[in-house]
Length: 493
Image (cartoon, rainbow, N blue to C red; front, side):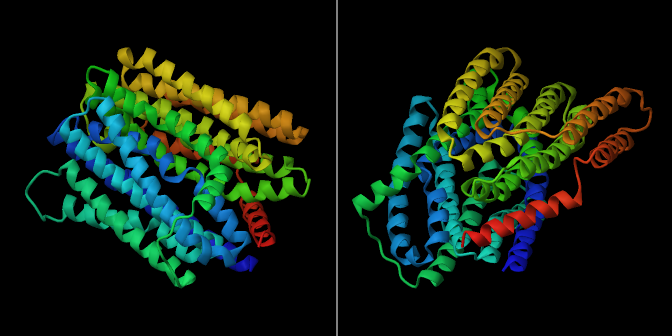
């Protein structure tokens, strides 16, 4: 069983790390580039409306997926009983979601065109939400291979469809943002249908039924998770919405922000995967009253080694990377590149929260996380109102960096206090050497006289060597985390 788990875990990691970054930086970024050339600001409108659908996405879930994954994993025989009931409950939540989304659109005084796009994007989020629900059932049943296929199928289909539209010569008409949105509907719809069929094959039966008491029970259990997800979604995605709404050139600034955000999202996948790996590990250790210090420090060193290497490289070569990918003029470059630089530094802060936020979740410290997330929302919104009118995309990205850094700092403080964490002298030396040497690399970069491509490679590999030599990144650490994950998953089943 452990061997099977590690194999399937490696499969899902490989598929995600191969397909999703290519989709984000290859397809999505190319669409942004072409759409902005032909209709400046149209991608900004799309990006802002998409952010709004993400914020409202909590009403599609309300923490049900977290509850369902644990519940089915522990009691697989309940799949047939719960599948129809939860499916019907989620159908009702989709109606609530669409109503709330349209009311927000009317409140923001969106045009008929914007409301139309918002509705389609909302429908796409519904398809994604149902796919995630189907995946939670498959994950709970340890159907890892099927779950891993579903996790990347929508992106793979989008790569195929959008590649044909971008480079297949199917039309002489310049690429329109609407094509991208409709392509998403097709890809998400196919993936959702396949997910339903895969779960139906396990449950053997399905009917539309709704039980009030059952629904209330599930919503009560999942509410603390739902509140945390909502608050985090607000300060993750409010930047794009506020940019489009309160800046005088909101559409254009939102598109400038999106250019750097594509890279940020590609990098952020690493932290997201780490959180998924670590939650069952921390949960098992805490449940058994065992110390989490060693595995926490191990994972923190590994993720910081990766995030600092990627984040500092992106920050130092922000102009060159954005110009290389989008080939934009100097005025647009300044806004996009500076915003991108701040976002890459945010990636370092967010990576820290993926470690400490996960251990606090495993500890059950949801009250602390919700309070912290609430203040994070307030700080982010206030900073956006101050910075966006003057600095546009740069201001939004800087507001995000400040918010993420403060959130990370306080999560560390809370985790140290609640779990009584301690760091041995060897690890303190490792962290100190890593940050000192990494800072030294930044001081040397301006003196490199070679081409930017050679310079970025030198910088990246210098940071990698520093990470390895100081013990931040090691194959042994990766194998230790995967092995611990497999043992905790097997013991829970």
